[in-house]
Length: 397
Image (cartoon, rainbow, N blue to C red; front, side, top):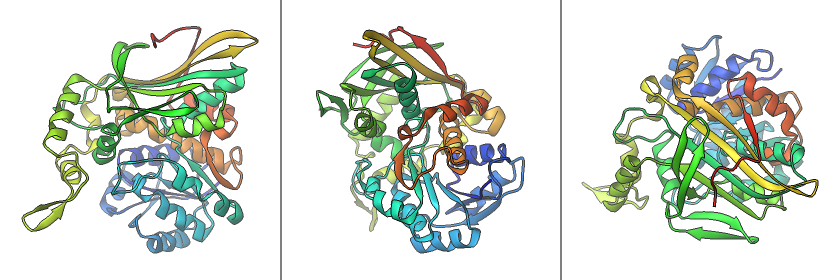
């Protein structure tokens, strides 16, 4: 039904490649490209069908354009770093090819991520007759689809949204991040933000926390953070009075993070070392375990969902929708841990929605702007079954 170019050969890129190859009815020719060709070839060797591979620098628009013109995809799936969103979007504009990513843009020199840079491309993409689908992982991604589904089927008005993300698994390492360490640590060490009373409110990093009772897991300390989907959700669902995002961290993880932060290893400001200029966080990334290598010994599950409170037929209603995902089962299927799996599967489904025309109109969009039903129908079929609870509190204050 369409040719797809996947850019990025890390843990999530591996999952996307496997899932695309499991869906031959929707994807014709497939190419996996990365700065490191060897990574692509190693993934390709384990796939259930042949794909093409290529080397490309995703920061270089001319290289991207040349590769797109050579392979002629119908859709480019950006599974690279958020730093590279704009260069890949520029290449898609130049070649008039549809675009999808899993995380919004952030500049390398400022630990700040927001959609404004990508939303600025709306008119350009519309005039070019192509579509960009932003943030089609799990959170962001499925969290937005869950919210749209709740709005369509369960509420007349949504008032309070809490997105919860728990990783109750263990990889056996003293300290490691489940996705790119540089992106992960930049995200966690930022100030928290949440939407309330028609404005953004800031908190000190990880200073607000409470116990949340996760299904099949139990109570876990959960920390308020800023997460990018909040920005688009409060715009697309203006009845929301408060929107927050919560994530769990073990005390061991937080202790390591505090020490690294205190000694300057999480800084993104350049320092001089032996006559060279280095970024401490980039050096830290180089010595930490590669996230794509964590899957083999990972045990336990993740639990990610949305608790929403609002009105239906004039009555108060609480609705909780979530997915639990098992690390060991993910590794057995595609050789990845659950954090990569829960990001890669929705990216593939988003590509499927675009190629089939179910989600397709020129411009730049977030996932919650489309009909959630066809996407939700595919989630369980491709390994992420979802569950609902009505009028069931998660012990939120």
